Image (cartoon, rainbow, N blue to C red; front, side, top):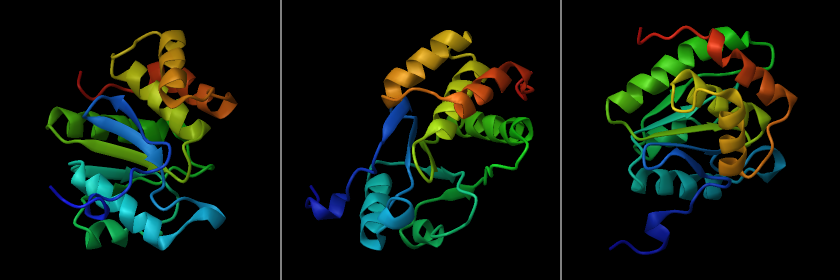
Length: 169
């Protein structure tokens, strides 16, 4: 049994999307003025100790991604900027997440904060993947899961889910 500090600390706003397989959180270490290097390290240690085999960052910049490498956590950078074409981003991201999960990976997805974009992305994914095919049910489920309402930006992503091609077909 490792000591308390060797286990790291759970990232803020951590939530399971698919229990023990796919989760979301805010950027390890926090974002903006709240970002702390020591906290980032402790949270990445927690991610590693929980057995996450892949971290996907959708943060626009590649700041601090080297921290995952230093702490031996595999990562992917899939920036999702405000000016990007959402259908194009989702058409690449959803099949990647699906393939990782199908391959037995334990996946953690994060943006700067656990806000509208992540909430909408998660709801769109559960619709696209067929886990919860009805948008109202998926939206309600994700809102409960993340304990936050999905706003206009997120709802736009939810509305796109049926239009995203399914690479599994």
